Image 1 (tube, rainbow, N blue to C red):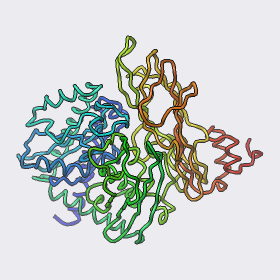
Image 2: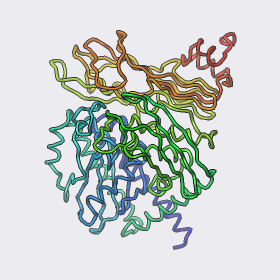
Image 3: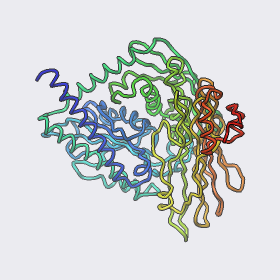
Length: 551
């Protein structure tokens, strides 16, 4: 076969492979039971070589899941070498240090066989609605209090499901039907990937996938090295202060670019917390690598080869490299700020491509209620977010999760599955950081219970004390806050009670602005006033707007 024909065939197989993993992810979402899987799409899916290298990932998915899963399959193979597995075997874990950072994420790996020989593996992850223990609250002092810990083990052996494991799961979680349903959805989506890969290999008469996988990784590595070669050489520094739990947290990074790649050093970052906001290194690597790649090579495949050009080191047992058995349930309160931390380093050399800071971690609404004469017990997570940072030449996106990429859960879904009622969900005026390009707006939510019983709020919020900073002369976004409709302030973190008849009010933070506010087009200011995004007072104070221009 000529080289040109070979390259064309590889491109076709690559496109088919992307379709296969995307169908894998979509199957997980369609079969999922919990809102985090079915509505928010808090999942990942991908295909791996027999050596455990990620070849391709589904577009659907979050960086924290995808990039940490990219490294986790090697842990599965270390525990269960392919030579010890057989068709019909399925592996599972939620080990925070070997998978995706906390117990609430369950990862499943399924080997693919052809003529009795292993040719690839499919892996997937989803965030389950509950894993027992202290629930999603970050108040546990060790990982043991955060729920059921499943070491790497067999979920199925030669096609027979491990019912003993499922019994343990059902006995330890508050939502056994949803959690067990999501586990079966994980198994099913890998089987969908398996069938599609078999079809591709049938069509192209492939006995194994090794050479195709090798060529995919080689092409990706060369392309990533070209992207790195186009950058200046040197080291750049940035730091960021976020709220933390018992005290503020300093995230510190230096980015060094050399001929081998991009190297991140987090020396200077704060030490660990007593509470569950610590971040295992796998999750730190995942979001830091996403920050690098989204800036310098967003169009390249996200696989083991491109990720290999990005390295990270962090001090042992700092908050970004927490040791077992530190509590880690809310590791996103650190990890999701890392792209902005990395952007701050790159802003010094790529100012025209780098956005201002965003809300960072999600403002998910986690509520629970015990069984009562009025309604069944429930545990629910509804995904929501403040505003994203402004971009060069573009305003920030309002109420949009960045960098997680999960979807907001429609309030109607939450209301249909629980006794929760959402009285208001609206964009929050004057929450966006002013700038030549303004930040994205946060949002306001007012939430209550239809029945006269209390709700438990599992609060895990940040940017209450430290706002998203503006860039290149832009102003910071507004900080967030949470309180009862009666006026009582609530803590940003920890379990709290919403009394019967009371309403929870969330005001989510806004993204930072980009560029001096006085350079903003007056027509855009007028449009924002008309839309209710900014008040006249804000327009005058932050933008120097002449009220006489408003009609």
